Image (tube, rainbow, N blue to C red; front, side, top):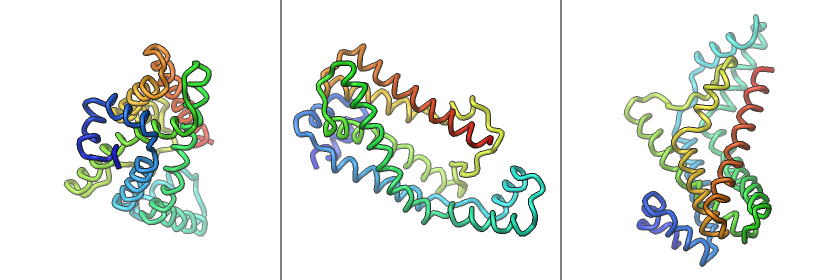
Length: 220
């Protein structure tokens, strides 16, 4: 549990290179992976789902004159799929899948850039860098407990602009994650600073493409 010691979690914020040195030397990754998955599960379990009225309003806005029977069925389906329990259990798979996919992405990028890396190292540094997302979870939960309103909009508008999607995709925590990823490949894979920046930028572009695809699908 070396990486998850309180002082090392603090170092992830103020001196991340020290944490990635531990990852490089010991190749630890399971503890970071489990912490992130569990944190995501708890986060989804705590945040409330939209009310029936909010869902019904959203359906009416995004479906032109839906028949009453279809409207009721759609609302019930969305109520179920957006419930905290369903979101939480879905996140167990989703959070793990995100780490696996981006571990493969980082592995390929670093290999192309002639870095010293294997899948285990890539998985370890991605699992470590993504821990910064837990700070966002804590902030959102604090906002909910204080205001009794969810800071997350689970009912994104169908006419959301690309600029809005871009702002949501590259929030301060996502940028922080990309910076940590760059530091991680610099320390763990032995890339130069310039190549580490390139790696982070490529991951950022992939995130941007995924956001764009999500936007296009949502408008279909």
